[in-house]
Length: 466
Image (cartoon, rainbow, N blue to C red; front, side):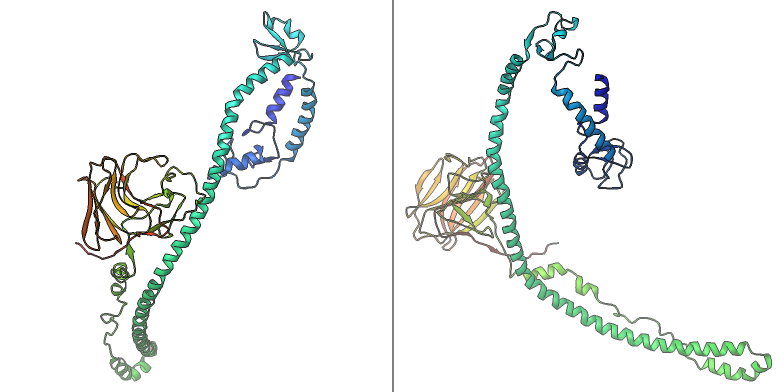
């Protein structure tokens, strides 16, 4: 009986989950599976095929196997009462003992059998209590891990929502910028399409006239040939009577070859398409700008607000709920540029305000985003109305600035180890750090100012090189 039950349970088990079928469905190859198991299996596959024989299924929603479903339900109904009695499968006695050596329940007959000679036994309730306590201890790290995961999930849920908001804001900004470009492009497109249509109309009209002329010539020639061929089929006497007239008619027909196209008959495609994008770009450069430094909002302290076009930042004095991503500065009101540098020369201008504290400069990629920044930072600060230079080696050095800065230019020469600051309005040098950089550095802005600090754009020019 036990072997029959075991074999039946195998027959009623889904090949995917190895459990008794739930809502079984059958494929055209006759293999059956739980409906949910099959659909989950197929979500990971490009082709809907049988998990057993790999035969391709023609249906994405296979029919239910009602016969198998009824058999499974009947089997479970028969199996449940037998399990609730907790009887030994060998001796049909109640399982009141637990074999510590085999780690399985046993009956009083099992205890005296050869299989359990010299084995240790405990009452089922005692063994269950001991094993439950052991399992609880094993479960504790998982429970702690689950609690930690739940806390992480809260942050990740916030992150997921923030991602949606970022995507929506970014999409709006993209559409806004493209809308401005479309206005220019649509006007340019209309101008170029108009020129094309005018050329098309002119040359199409010319071809129409030539086709009409040629069609008349074809009709006249066809008629002459038709009449002459009819004369050729006439009787000899009749043919000879009309011969002179036929020859005269054929000879009077002009044979001038006027079937060649004149030069320039086609659309001048090269004129319309040649260097089209470059020509448009040359016209566009007056309406576009370029920034040598773009702010990365994912690094911005929660008190900072980065503009939609990522070109300016200001302090809001109100902390926003933002994801706790590893790039974000927590203890300093700082935002980084989106691109770091580990070679070459780079420069950017920042429009500043002199009402509240701010600083601009570069910072090592390894600088911690939480806690104190003890090294890896080089900057010019405005603090309490005074300009100072700050770095791990310089600490605070007060600078001599004759008039309040409106703009500050940062020039990084990574290879030569120089970071210079100047006033582009007066072309005056402010301060230069000398340091051997060993890692990637990022531009940064730190500000308590409610007015925005702005990365100034550059005008775009076009140079053609061979």
